[in-house]
Image (cartoon, rainbow, N blue to C red):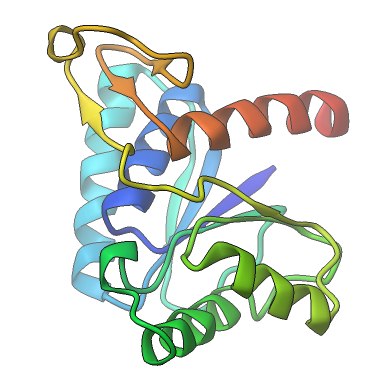
Length: 180
């Protein structure tokens, strides 16, 4: 099973790291080739530290994958309607342009609900909105969190909040029922 991480900015980097920790095979896609290469190097180092069996590839073209995690476009705090919505929508449509209409798409790019409505109208049947609020998404060392919340995922030496925890929880359930 191959998971495409479309957009390797702050959110995509965190999700990629946790997927490598869990041993998933991932393909990274971003329009920023320098960021893409740097993230691949960092993930290969993490892979060795975690002793993970993940296969990490990069793609300069929209990838083919079994599952798409889409976090591309401009960050939420810069989304001012309608200009940035249009930008983010085009970024998402580009990222999944090689996806079949029945592929699972975990959508993180904001505004998630508006983009999901457009994708639904285009015929995509399995678009799941993840994390309407990305502000909580962080990687921190264990000691930096005084009071863990219900949405905390504990990885090897990391605590991750919000979107990453939702993605991992969903993938764990989905892959258990569809790939075991």
